Image (tube, chains in turn cyan, blue):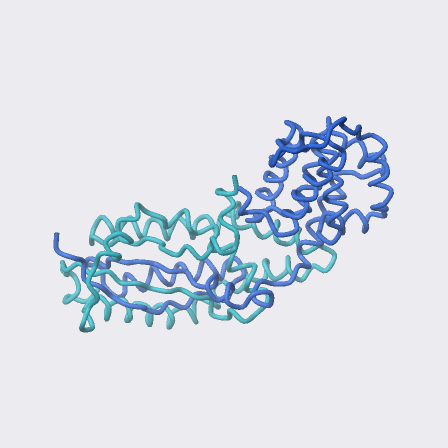
Amino acid sequence: MSPETENISETRLVKVEGRPNSPELPKEQTRWERFKFWLFPHLRKSGELAEAYAEAKVEKEKSEARKRTEEAAEIAARKDVTRQEEVKEFCSIVDGIFADDGLPPGAKALKLAKLMEENPQVAAQLDKIKDLIEKLALNKGFNVEVVDESHKALGGQADEIE
Amino acid sequence: MFEKFTDRARVVMAGAAQEARRFNNEYIGTEHLLLGLVKEGSGTGSGVLRKLGVDLIKVRLEVEKIVKSGPDVVTRDKLPQTPRAKKIIEYAIEEARAAQQNYLGTGHILLGMLREKEGIAFQVLTTFGLKIDDVRLEVLALQGEEVPLMEQDPAKWESAVTLTLLLDPGGASAEEIGELFLEISTLYRMVGGSGVNFTIVDAKEPAVA
């Protein structure tokens, strides 16, 4: 952590969009939808940031918070390339599921969902994210929430189906 | 709840109501749902029946043998569903959930019919030798062949493809926030995705209270 950013107290709201790296790939669609679907409950918070954002003034100049978040996105993108190699083996399990021609497509999707829910490595990765958010919230006053409602365009979340 | 139904599932529901009226029945029962499904004819539900060698015309005839016509023309606008018909929809929702699908389609309704064992729909379907496990597998297989959303509706896909987050970075450094982005991207890669690229849309200053 750089000394200049250690004690930043200003509050700024930064809107960030995450998109899959290869949205054009057909296989990406199912995986991304399921991923978002599954991740949302873990990131959803009280809605206080969304409320503050709706009432906030538009910033005239590039804020420090924005610059910091942009830098964060760059750091993540850079490291993501190396990380790709680390999870390669894991990805091969998923690709194996999708390459199994004897399995109906729906059954593949079920298998993937099961993997996401039950695999200890995936669960550990999710816990890592949750811990990171908690730690940053506690020590740095960081806050994050999902404001994306576009999943509803797909027919709503499964837990809202009733 | 109806908003989660696919267009074809809605057609099945509307068809069931029409069938109930045709028989002067003041309710929508499991038999009407089955007739609605057969009448719709192009969804996963009817597709699976065909794939498993079931003749849809024979299904219709079997149901019609059992259904009793009411004495008077039904005039009420909305027909209530019988408890068994409701149960079929409940089971259909369970099937959608179990398959992690965020919509309710005709395939789920068919599965619901095979789970509600007291209904006429079940009675008719089992005369064709259908087994729920076979049907479930075929439903999943056919659903998997559905046209991807990005081809079906690129605008909807464009909106669905974005995960929007609001951040208050507080005192977190770029490295720390970057680590969070990276871990989210890694998680996506672990489930077979291509990683996540984050971009900043805008930044705002909260209004002073």
